[in-house]
Length: 160
Ligand SMILES: [Zn+2]
Image 1: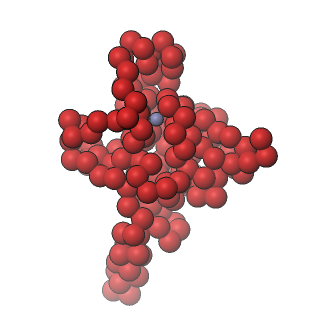
Image 2 (image 1 turned 60 degrees about the vertical axis):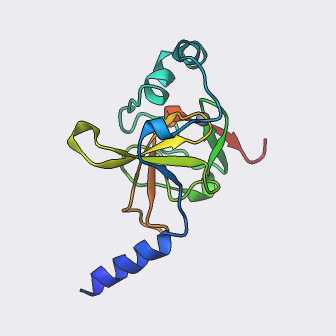
């Protein structure tokens, strides 16, 4: 019982940190809009499969999974800032994991019922690129675990 109260409080305290949420893709008009053929040209087939076709990279293969330098992670599709390194943690799940977005609204959430699961997909608000999913089982005070494909990210070190 004590545990339930503890987790409920954690959940309530996380409500202040909310992404923009939409219920269906047709409600969402990103700032950056391109033809899919243009995205394919610019991104190459590997990133295109993740960002534009909602693919998932194999766990433990991404270049930012075990990457803990100080800096900022941006969308590899459009360059919009998404996460600070200070919000990154090792979730041991095989993908880069963060506990909050860089600023409110940088990430858009949408309900995802593909694959027989109910999950919350996360998109770059600026270009609509698929990033991964967010789960409410994070180990920090936000209770959130943004689970992101490395291929959806680019990284700028703080001393560059
Ligand atoms: Zn983007």
